[in-house]
Image 1 (cartoon, helix red, strand yellow):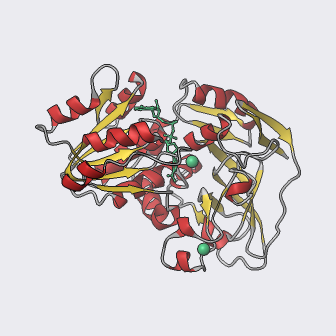
Image 2 (image 1 turned 60 degrees about the vertical axis):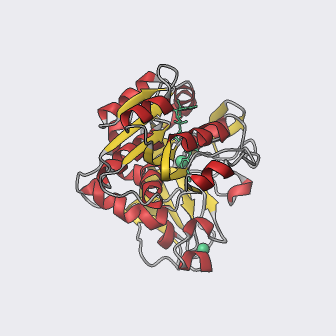
Image 3 (image 1 turned 30 degrees about the horizontal axis):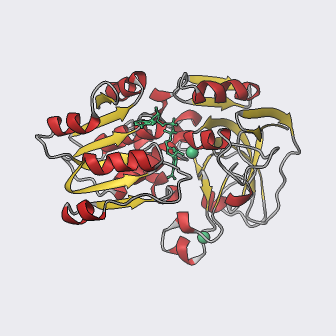
Length: 348
Ligand SMILES: NC(=O)c1ccc[n+]([C@@H]2O[C@H](COP(=O)([O-])OP(=O)(O)OC[C@H]3O[C@@H](n4cnc5c(N)ncnc54)[C@H](O)[C@@H]3O)[C@@H](O)[C@H]2O)c1
Ligand SMILES: [Zn+2]
Ligand SMILES: [Zn+2]
């Protein structure tokens, strides 16, 4: 089958690789209909993910049709239209039973190399899904595959971050980074009751995309995000800050943007091991800081329902739909910020 493989920094290829097969009784084999290129794939593309060895199949966002199921799969049959969760969980360990699927002892991420569960990725014609009953969802009839794809990662990641922040109706939210995750945070914030959302990016066109979703755009570099948010909040700061870039600089910015007593949730993937935590101001200003991997299984049913009901429209941010064979172009456009969200379509 054709699949996108990692070849080295800034190099992906579309190659013929062996088709995956069922390995465990709980596995499903899914024929991929649509897969995304995510900001998290860019960390791989930049050569920053150590477990990615040349030849590893990339990609973790996907929808498809179940082709085959192992004897242990109860909830799915061949022909079912499904969306996958970008990270997998077993559903039975203590963490899973507590609902902390992102802390599963068998945690893995599709297409993220040998340090993340060694799961071949979904930018391919077929993908093997372990613990299929846990890691697949049937796509409601009201949703097309593109809409559902967002529920397997960026939309649910962002929605979950706002839940983790305990957003209350009427509050203000600052979102740092207007890539797909940041834009989904803008949409989710409004659905969860935010009165105002400030959307910060270095790039004008990305901040403007957030503006089209209802946010107040702030182009870092043209105006200082902290002064601007202070000005817009009567000097108080934002109730909630979502960091959707990754790394110490934007996390530090989050501390400057948040009001006393406010909450920060950092989502961005980083390879930095540590960060100079502002202990003094964190203490006196009573700041809650949360960082972590998305817990897709906790929130995916909610996001699928909200998209099905027309309350969220993630496909508004899709800029490119390319055949799988053009994945190298898709990666380059997304990396160079010429594309907002690239979908790859293996069937074309
Ligand atoms: N925690 C999780 O489980 C999880 C899940 C999905 C994605 N992520 C991570 O979330 C982050 C965002 O994902 P994405 O798909 O939107 O990525 P992206 O790379 O498309 O978007 C990042 C955006 O941040 C902007 N940016 C960069 N530096 C900035 C700065 N200093 N100030 C303001 N804006 C800045 C960029 O211009 C870009 O628009 C990535 O790090 C991704 O790996 C984490
Ligand atoms: Zn992702
Ligand atoms: Zn588990």
